[in-house]
Image (tube, rainbow, N blue to C red):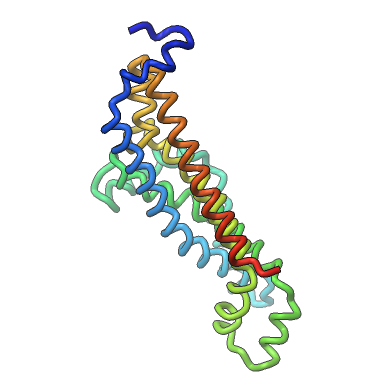
Length: 228
């Protein structure tokens, strides 16, 4: 097969379509599962950062420093390095270091700190007067969280998880380069390493479509939620 020239990008007879759809499903599965875990873990970390940010207690400030250090460190590590660094942890958690399931721990640990910062910012943008009013009416700390903080910041939270999901789609492609499956592995092994340009092109196009779908769903949800 001639791998040179623009014509090689349009030799669609060289695409194994069943393999492409299987890889697409793996990418979507990795993304959805990771987003679900990141949404919960990132919300908890962001809430912890928010609640401990202005405390006068030394112990609470120390907790804030520890959580912030964890968030900042794991936000700073490039994903391709992080996934290799966490291979022993992945082996312990899922019992494997390859395949779609093995990518989940690294995807979560890389994205949760990022989303946690977005959650913290969203909470800080909530009108302090609304919180003070709820406190004056006798609301408990947890009532303020789930009846004021989260509802008032929900559009920003959904927008943040949308951005995080799109980043995760890119991460799944990088994870595929070292055996995590999905469209990233298909583009790398069946496309790049096999000099099959059309597979790389088609895999890229499918990834772009997945990104557009997630972005549309996120934007649609924000418009429905935001009553301003």
